[in-house]
Structures are given as C-alpha cells and as structure tokens.
Length: 568
Image: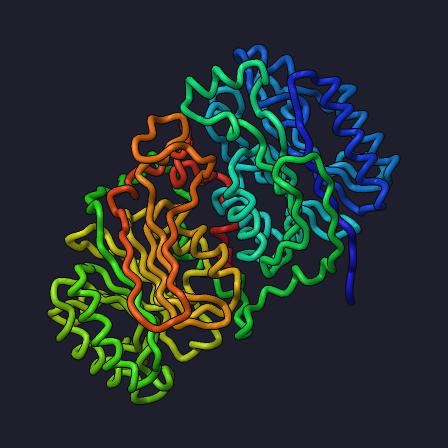
C-alpha cells in the first residue's frame, strides 16, 4: 500500500548574526509551508557561520535546546504542521560543543537528535565528534534518519542509518563542494535504496569582510568560499526528484511513496541487505590507531587502457586479442576488458574450460601488461565467478565474487578480498556484483589498494553515474571499469589528482571547489581501445582537509549496525 508524502529542502545564506539567521530559518519555513509539506529540511550550522575566533566564541554562539532559537523553530513546526530538521551547534556539558541535527514534530516536540560523526577541517578544532549512533525515529511518515554533510561524504554513517531501518535520510549541509550535490548526496540514496532529502547553503560560508584575505591565505578562490547549493531530494534508485540551483535561496519539493524504500532488491532479485557479509567487515570497526598502516609504493603515472568489444562469446576472443595487442603497442601496462566477455553462458558446464582457453590466449598477447576481466574458474565446491589478472605467464591473480547475487547464484562465494602487489603498485580486483557494496571498496582500500579494476556488468544506472565514481572518490583509489556498451553507459576510468588536501599548496592545478571527485576518462559507445593514465602514487594521500582522513576518519566506534551478523 502506497504511503505518499511531500518533502521540502530549503537552502539559504547563514551569517554571523544569530537573530538574522533565525529570521532566515523562519522565513524559509514559512515559504515551504505555503506548499503544505510533510517534512522540511534546513541546512547545517543554521545558527552561525562555521567560523570562530576561538573555542569560547564557538561556545557563545552555540545554542541550548531550551533557548529562544530552537524554541522558535519548534513553534514554527507547529504553525506549518510539518516535521522540521535543522542543523545547529549545541552547547554541551563541560564547555563542549557539538554539531547536531534536530528533528521536530508537527506538534513542536523534539523527536530526534544526532551529533555529527565525521568532522572536517577546523570543525575538528572546535566540535566534539559524536559518541552515540545517529537517531532513527519512527514517525507517521516512516522511519527518519539524521546525518550532516561530511557524514555523507564517506559511506558509514548513512549506511548504518539505513541498516537500522531508515526509510528517509535527512542531510543538513554546509558545503562549498559541487561534488557533494553531483556525487555524495545521490549515491547514499541509491546504495542503500532509501530516500534522501538534503539541504545545503548558498552565499558566503566565512565572514564576508574576511573573504578576500581568507582566499589569499588559503589559495582558495573567493567563489569557492560560498555554499554550493544544489539542495535535493533523491529516490531509492538514485533519481534526483528535485534539485535547487547553485547560487540562489530556494525551496525545492518532491512527492514520493515512502514504501519504495523498503524494497531492497536489485533488478535480478538480489536483496542488497540480506546479501551483505558483515562477518567479513569486522576490521571496519577497529580503531585505526591499532591497525598497521598500508605501505604505498604506487607508480606515477600508469598508462592504462579500457577495451570495448563488438562481439561477445567465442567470437569476442580474437577481437579482444587484437585490441590488447594494440593497447600493448601503445604502451598500456594495465588493460581492462569487460566481464565474462568471451563466455556464451557463464553458468554453463563448459564455462571453466572456455575461461582457461581465454587465459592462455590472452597470455600470448599480454607482453609486459596485465589484463583484467572476469571469468569462471574452478573452486572448492563448484565453479566461481572471478575477477582475474592475466600476464604473459598466464593467470596472475584471481578474486572470487564475495557477495551472493541471483544472476550468478551458481558461483561459490569467496570469503575475503585480497590485493595484489604489482610493478606499478597494489592492485585490487572486484567482481561487478561486489562493487555495489561500499564495504567492499573500503576493505581493499584499507589493504593499500592503489588501483581497483572492476569488470563491470551493471544492472542499474546509478552504478555508472555515481556508484563506482564515488567508490573511487571516498577511498582515494584509481579505478578501471570496463563494460560492454549498453543503454546504461560505457566503460570509464577514474584517476586521482595529485593536488588534493584543502588548504594545502596546490602545484598542478588551481583549487576548483571539488572535494574528492576524480578525473574521468569515458569511452564512447563504439568498440575499441580507450587509453588513459592512472596515478597510483596519488592514492597514498587520503587527507582531504585538516585532521580529516577519508578512511581513518570513519566513525569506527559507531559501526555496530554495519558489523552485526544475523546471529549477533
């Protein structure tokens, strides 16, 4: 039975005058209320710019739950008869301050409070990281989960909310980064099959009088000291239902059926939650300080190639050999072919023998390069869908599929992800149906993978538009995704920029506001070889901003929902 609701995301400017900021919140809530929404989401840090003279200043401009600011928000929720989410800084015991998202009911009651779990930049100097899981609140609209900005740039916080049953995830942002809107917001909806309502800011994110000086001191152009806007509402398949502009105050609305978020099945029928392997994810919940840091020795640069084929099945093998020879002669050291390209039927009895023949044929033309694809190999208990690397000596590495999928139900599952040392760095191989799980990329990145090659056979559009790109971005790994052209898209590669850390000295390019988005090379829809250059060496730097490491900064102490097995 459908359960349709109307959601709104409001974006506006927040300055350093708390009273003016309150007026802005109330004005935008009134504007939203004209359309009778069921829920309205406001941005992060609505009470004051996230810019402080010192810790005392941060505390003084922060709020109390009983104070006039939040009581006015509660009263306005009653007036417009809607759930309201607002991000603020809160005064806590001992003179501490948290960045917090608060959920008020249409009766003005505080229903949920979530502290920010992943802090970025100078937030680490002024705010306390959450020590409790984020709120998931049962309401008449469905189960609502709260998170804030950098919480959604990496996957763990939203993932835990979804695993705890959130139907709608509500994200308040304070972001200058255009890739939050294009990448990090929509992927959290699609990878968890939930709705996301996200509200960002526009206008200066630092004191206006200081913008020129801050720009000069940080090498950040003034335009990127402003909120990026693009507040949006996203469906469980990754479709953006509504999006605001980048520079204007605006409220966007969308109506949707909440019950769609309770169907976690892929087009082939695979349930993406029940097929998770939490017994394999335990390292994600360990303190990074207790783990051995990976050793990086990646090359810079690495010539690579993506190959798309006119044929499939047996006829594709000769075509693939010719394309590999061309790529090798052009200098490619890592060559990616589509998955299962030479097999007429992957589950057939002769799939293993056909795969062995393909390995021998590709080895003959590999030269000094490694060739990646996926094939079907023998495994204990049957046959296994494997991502493979092939060199002149034959099979160099294999990675069996780890997560069950209906379309490859015949495959024996592997119980681990491995990485492989090569002359150009650390290579991870990943089957297509493993790449939809954010935990999978995390595990290989924590083992030091510089490059991940995915022989891709996508089932959903989001895998190409946000999914795999975001996996490369949030883990700072280079990526090859080779596939046969289809209505969903074509092969692509993602290479890491050298200049990355915000507020650092950028040597090869000017800061462009992008937080983590890699450099993309896309193949067209024709068969052939697409050359590109990857940068394994750049995978070593995962510090996106001051005291903000993309992997070690995960909220490892709050990941029980992600790690819980059926028996726990």
